[in-house]
Length: 598
Image (tube, rainbow, N blue to C red; front, side):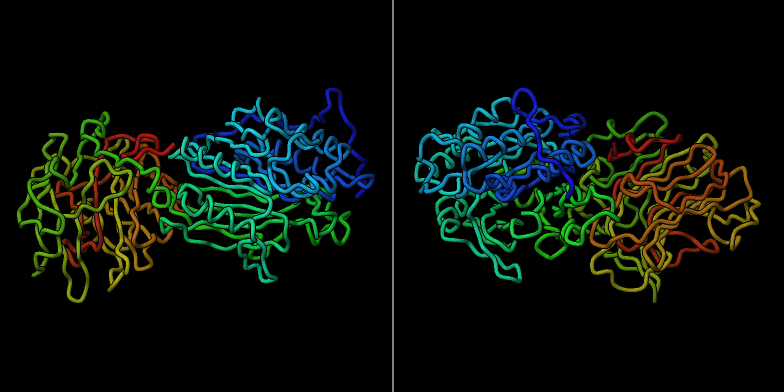
């Protein structure tokens, strides 16, 4: 590959570019790097550390952009475990010093002719024993023999435990590992070892003999261990086992020494996304990727990125649910109204005891029920049913968005053919009916569309001001019969926010992406007096018009939740849940929304 053998720098380690700065321990997205068998790169006089140095350079240089928390080696660092090979590997690994924390464990090639971790001194232990990790803030400790270590990572706003176990853990080693778990009972745990599982050519993995011993003696009865990683065998593979608590344990085998250039320093990145509740896995060789495409040998091009089902995949993990047995998330208490009414709040409605009287989950709201405007500004809402709708079109619900201040909502069961539904509307003399908001405004609400999404609900209204835009002198819309301001859901489940400004003769309209069903969405409409921007879950949508929009051409008619008029009459009502709704007479940033977004 045209790379010269690595040369040792003064002090016995080899510096590389990059640095550890920029890692965000509180971000909900972070990565764990996994490095399997590198033995063919440290093989007597045919050693070539260049691929591994490129891997370490990648990790150091991308630590911030990839938010890489840690790197775990899976054993078989060297081919023969000689002092020469071990020292060359040790100098190469030294390149990560003060840049990326890591762990290394012994494979069978690192400790020739050994039976378990009670083997005593060795060149491996001298180079990769506990002293090597002592200066890393992730290092937790080691077993008395020194061949097993544990590491505590701060990532995703919480702590995680990583066990690095010898390729043949003794009974004493297992006892030590159980003790580590007992000392850290609330930490989700990744177990790494060398000999864990093997796989067939299709990638279906099963436990090896030693893997079975680890399963029966440690993994199965410790619910904290949700991911177990091993090398040693090839081809790569994976499986899912069920532990004694009835939860999934993902068992993965990664090893690329049989591929071009001894694996060429191939790494696997486990990208945790606690928001999406997924772990995305990718496998690639930074050394091969760094070459210009036109200068890559054929085999380099074939091996620089692996995309089989066992090398590139995603794991769906509801982390709160999976870890509930040992680290339950304390329930978030509702926030009192005073905490979510910033300056210039003109109306705030919620559907718990703070906002309305009585009502248990699933109980219909009585006709005429009043939902108080908690600002005290006189914009109370009154419930009424549309057409000849029955009581079940509007009921109390305990469902709520996880970031919603109140832990309650209303379930609307509106629809078409025949039209049915329910609305909440202000009184005829409510101040909100005539407010113009020429200095800007923010309108927020929480909604959830049912799953399954049954029936025809195209163009149903979420909220609106009543009246005809034609009566406000507006001429540019597709019809003068629609309200001066409304938030609706199209047949494709797109949000449509259409406003007729107080100043301009225009109808600037924002359109969202298709909303998912069966999940809550926080919606915010922000106008700064010049332009309107629609946000979903704190994320600005694409189809926000640049057209100037100053104020809202209100007509002194009621503000409504649960429907939108046409020709000054309601057809269908909203279908789904609506939660806390707030109107502020100025533009708010996402960090000021009812559920704040950084």
